[in-house]
Length: 255
Image (cartoon, rainbow, N blue to C red):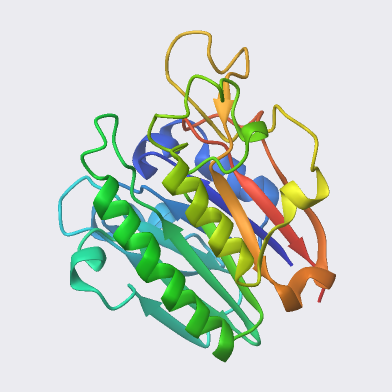
């Protein structure tokens, strides 16, 4: 089973840059998207519900903002939109699908913003989500939590780690939350398999030349619960795929 996750930074913009060609070429089993910036009724059928897939959406109340979707080849046994907190669900950030014994939760974590004006909101969201995921894992142990976490966890996860310690996405409080999240039976499989490797980035600034030089951050993840570790065949990312300021990340699970 091959799972992909991608912050497309606007699904309509990504479509103009080859999203559907990428989708068709990889023939994925599950695709989780973040930052859609559109509602399904604004899209043509190929984007709204790709042929051969079941589509689930969680949209933000605010137009042109946030939003997540999951496309699955197998019909889900359950689709749960949101996490049950109106303040968070109004921003279209959480979507859960159950397929057999597997549960995939697609999350677009808030950004703290450059002036840190949303840091308190982000950390409150993170604390609630951790509690929510712990309960879900107890019920559904074969759990994958994918998406844009908007946090680089380790020094190796961004190019200029020394100068970013006081910046959004690499603050001590954000990284400490990642520590606690992973301590509760979740695994950043990519980092566990590549513990000493730098340069594995999934997001780059739009400033000229930055992506070409691979000056970036790794903030997009597939994290798996303990019981899924033995089923992980491969995990990685596609830095060569354009179409967004993020690149797709993937996870392959054995049946």
